[in-house]
Image (cartoon, rainbow, N blue to C red):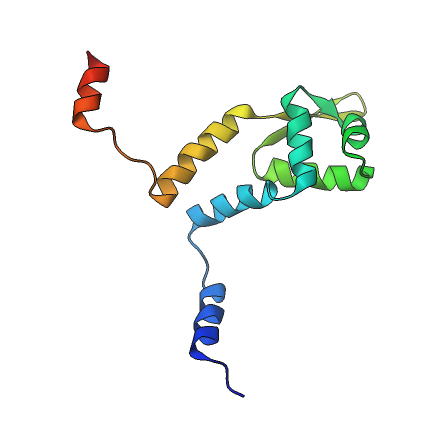
Length: 123
C-alpha cells in the first residue's frame, strides 16, 4: 500500500529543518514540558538550591536531577555554580521575561502600541 499524499507531506515537513527561531522556542518549551523540571523550577523560584536539596524536594535520583538541570541550563533558565564540592543551581528569572517577549515576536503576537496610546504614554 502506497503512503497517502498527506503522509508524504507530513514526512517532508518533519525532514525540513525548522528556522532557528522556532528551534529556540522548542528548546524552552521542551525544557518546561516535564513535571519534574517544573517542580525544580518552582523550588528554585524560592532560592538557590544544591542538587541534594533538589533530590529531596523532587524525589528523584541524583543522576536524574542532574539530567533535568542540564536541560534547564541548556534552555538558559537555570545557572549552576560550584560551592565547594557541590553544585548550586539558581533560577534566571529574567530569562522567562526575555523568552516571553521573544516568543511573542517569533509567533507574530507582539503588536505595536497604537499611535493614540503611545502619545498618551509620552505625555
